[in-house]
Image (cartoon, rainbow, N blue to C red):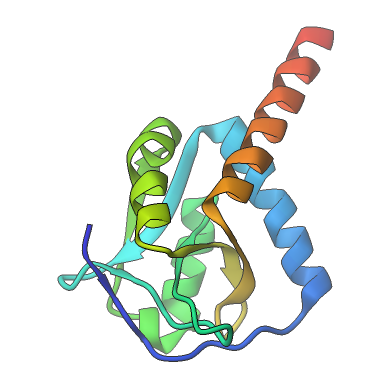
Length: 139
């Protein structure tokens, strides 16, 4: 997996970001797919204000298409679908080894949102999957 930098990003809209993060884990547990963007140079890993890089992921194709359409720096990129099992087994361990954060459902004209450590993403995903399984069992 190749990555590249788009420079610094800034954070705004904490409550909106929280809602986007909750939707991410719920959607991924349900649809078993995540999305990112890529071009010939790989996937973006912009520098965060904290000095760490983050790779963005979205929970649906429509979210990715909206970012590509509205955020100029992503305009030439293509959506990339990743099955959740591959993401958990292959992508997340490599991103953790590289010290990257995981951007969750970034949105808006500047593609902002929350970034999590890989272990936090895995824990939240496990809770979302367990919640979904419990809901199915009760139906």
